[in-house]
Length: 167
Image 1 (cartoon, rainbow, N blue to C red):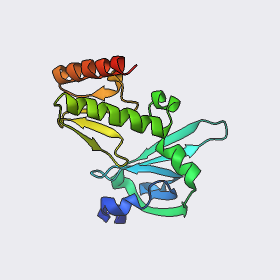
Image 2: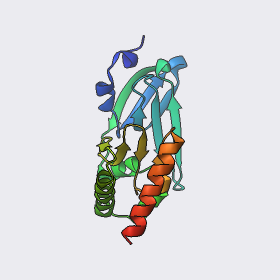
Image 3: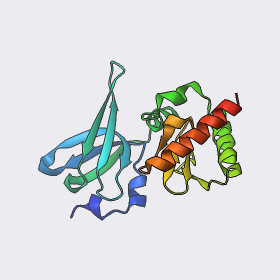
Image 4: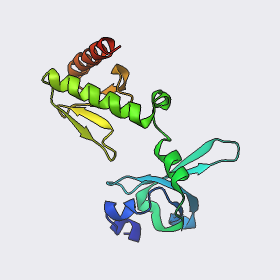
């Protein structure tokens, strides 16, 4: 088992949003900004920003990783770019303050309708309804996800009603 696989998820977190060099099996070498590490498989996702403005995303299987070396800490701009890389395009029209207001308003609306709701995630940006449905920014009906279609439909209808009432 490699040194990488022996580390804990908390230790892997130290590498997130940093530029790293990864040496994998068969002496393959990868370099890029570490976006995330899967806590179960130790898989790594690297992002490279290309000169033409596009980006390249590389996944490296955790069992292949031999060593990970930090090359650069990066600044707050790189961190922000990486954090918002896979954010829904819907969110780009809202300031962080607007998103916070929308979240709090929706949370109060759901609680008023006796629906158990909590905040989850690193930045507490995702609302979780009864542990079976999540609502991501910008907190519209299409931002809901659940495997329970009945709950999904009912909560989406409630959100639509809330949005209609607040406009």
